Amino acid sequence: MTEEVEISATQKLMETLINKMESMDSKLTNMEQQLNSPNRLLKKAGFVAMRTPIAEDVGPDGFRGELPNDAGVFAKSSQEDFSNQQIHEMSWEEIHDMAESVQPVTEMY
Image (cartoon, one colour):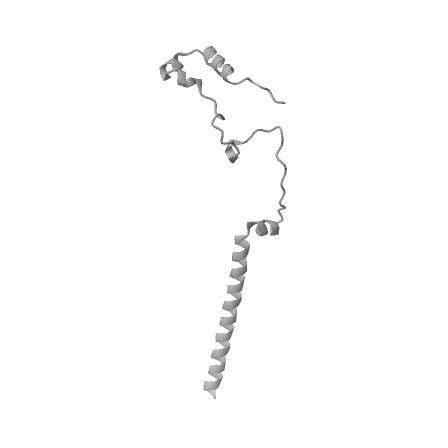
């Protein structure tokens, strides 16, 4: 009779452990699904997805990969016309004149 009590206690313990492992496995699976979907995770944290249209008067942003593939996007540097020594020997006035001749200064307020 004590063997039957031990077997039933052992079986009950094994069933409890198996049920606990299955519930932990289902929780882990649920957490994996949430982590695989960042939008769902951010929504649960209270963040709201919002998209704003790109402003029409703003140029492309090279840091976001918005530059066109045109070859003429980048201006040729006037530094190629001078050697390193010549640039070091220039006065500040000459450097400022060279900078102003490359691109007009526009103030945006």
